[in-house]
Length: 213
Image 1: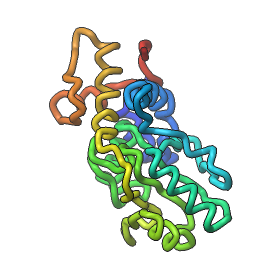
Image 2 (image 1 turned 30 degrees about the horizontal axis):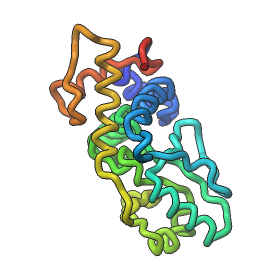
Image 3 (image 1 turned 60 degrees about the horizontal axis):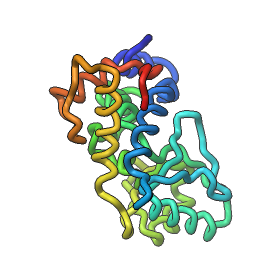
Image 4 (image 1 turned 45 degrees about the horizontal axis):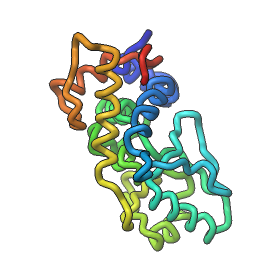
């Protein structure tokens, strides 16, 4: 069973897709949603139910913070046309792989932040096709454009964003690791470091762990 590190290398040579991380991603997301969506508050919601939004590819995780989702729906309603969504929420596994592609000069990736620092992991960023069609409408609804270096990337800057989502995104992986590796525990501190969390992510199986919850 390949690890995340092995997948990062292999996928850069063929396919340039993070779809192979799907089983591990699903496990991380399951732990994450249990933490951020409680009886008291909801911090990540699906966006694939927005009319006229089309999810492109099987690597996309169509989750956003509620304020970002509501704004995106307004944008689509105002344009009254299909929007093709390439990325929304990303796990730290996906973010690691994209960073490796960037560092290796592969897959046309010129912008990718370190895991634990991306707005995609906060649930407030999207990557889309036809950015020039949507740019002005997105900007007028609280979305900041990344610029010509990452033309399809927009970040929601409006009110109602929970900054703790990115911490819980990292912590979700840490919890998942500890449930499956009781003899090699790491701190569940929500910090992606190069000593504890980083090395364990590299060794994690892309097909997922036996224990999720």
